[in-house]
Image 1 (tube, helix red, strand yellow):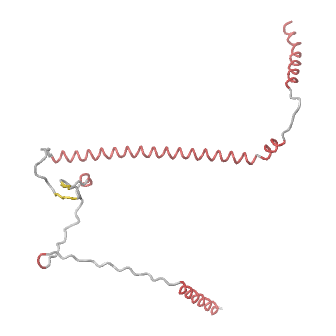
Image 2: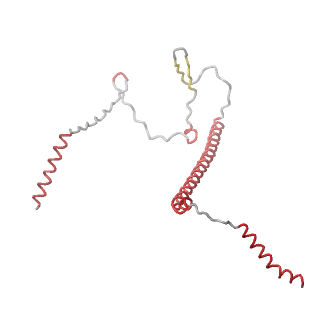
Image 3: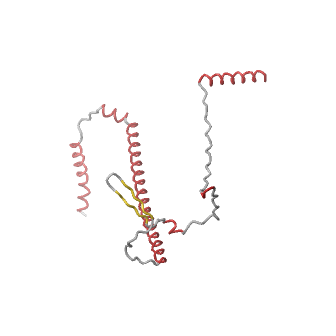
Length: 200
C-alpha cells in the first residue's frame, strides 16, 4: 500500500517537471511574416486551380493508359484472328489439295500456261503464269452463273461488232457575273416590295 501512496504523491512532481520542460522548449517570441500570411490568405483560389489541374492531368494520363491498353488488346485479338484465318485457309487449301490427288512429279520440261516477256534496257525477264490463284474460289467454290450468256452478233467478215455507248455530255454551269447577280437581286427585291404594297 505504501508503494501506491508514493506513486500517488509523486504524480504531481512529474506534472510539474513536464510543465518546466515545456516552458524551456517554448518559443519566446512569435514573429509574423506578413508576406507568407498574405500568400496563404490570397492563395486559396490558386491552390484550388492547381489541384484541379493536377486532377485533370491525372485523368488524362489514366485515359491515355486505358487507350493504350485497349489498343494492345485490339492488336492481340487481331493477331489471334489472323492466325485463326490463316489456319482455316491452310486447312481449306490442304483439303482441296487432298481432294485433287495430284502428286508432285517434279519439274516438267515443257512450261505450262502463258508466257510473257518483259524487256528493259539491260534486262530481259520471262514470266510464265502456271496457274491463276484465286483464294475465294478455293474457299467458297466457283461463283454462281447468271444464266445463259447472250450470243455476240457477228457482222461482215466474222468480225465482232462492238457497240459503243455515248457518254452523256455534262451540262456546263454558266455562272453569272457579279454585276448580273446584283441586278437580279435588285429586281427580285423590287418585285417583293411591289407585292407587299399590293397586299396592303
